[in-house]
Length: 543
Image (cartoon, rainbow, N blue to C red):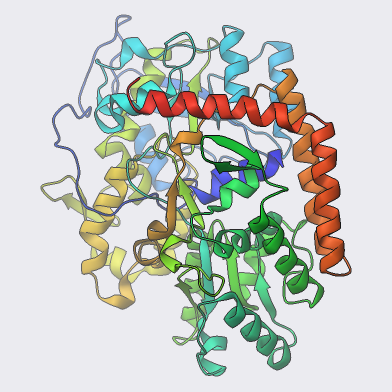
């Protein structure tokens, strides 16, 4: 379950991905933009004084590309005199993180989820507070705003976390996408309800026995969408986080009738082999391979706009009638489709970068991160250096696309996928505002698939969960230990449900898991999280 929550934060909300949110084109004024020279107390001048620091991405899946070997980071290295040295997790982030703490050998910057790991470092005195740099290097303060920064402050009132993909507007990359060629060959049937989906997947299985009817991505993400579509205003994150809000309290997910109905449906689809049979064990590369080959009829995942973009480009290059189209989230008959939420967003963004006390030049690192989150930095790290895919800017600072951007879609997609791996402090409002300025005025065949999918579907089906930020307990606390036990129970339950013989066994398994959770202290955990949730609501209301 802990891994599931990480996947939710990573893929549902945003950011590692090709874009983040909104699309209103409304950018704050350029006043205060950090693009020029600012001299630090030690004589450091960003863009003139060479800066080198180490960087660690605290995720099993994250491997940083070599700095300076692509056009964007080469430009930064040459023009801003910044070099970043990777500290790789090697697929074992938890072990690596704990080893670094135990040996007291921390990298200069750690990029990680908000919450427990960051709080461990703060309490140990291993993080540098950022407050003294906010006015001197003003991009973060200007774009994130005081409310967001205050929500990110620690118990001591100081700010240690530099947010990534912070936003005030809906964002998301998740949802359903259909294989155009298969859909059209089968007569383009109605696909709106779960009954429609079931009938369509049965038809796919009959007509295309080698095709996966419903590909659910890593860790069964597409299965989780069943919960979101089974009732109104039931965002997928409630199930993944292990609670259901009722009134002013967080209550048991095991007792939620919506959860039960969704799991019965999951069992039915899986047992009839309409769903990927390695749903809970497959890797991202395995998912991408299947989607890229066109061997998938329907895709449901938290990162559909990301993997769909590459797949759509590859398939359309072979056949103009191929590719994928994102569709509105499916739902139970009678459920209002405008109240089905398969994405979530948090104004605090996805994850954060923190500067450790190991850094020799913390001000220089902050200056770089602040530049990167500003207009110039975002243009470079998202679209590459000027002259390649953009030339000049409009009055709002948005890059003006070149002909190469419009015509060399395959190479642009590959380049932007690499640059996305360096997007550590993404500025949602600027990126999406800029994309909206450019993308939707292009001819339809030249538009970025992800942008169109996000604008038309993903962002419109995203639920604001800011109120639930930072409510998880520390792992070593009593509540944290309970949290892990309950998470394990939920993880085991998901696997058992898929292989259950019938509906009655599914319900019995959920009942048993609920009893085990209660014995593990589940009620105490719910009360703890409820208290934190209510405190967030007061903070958000200015109390």
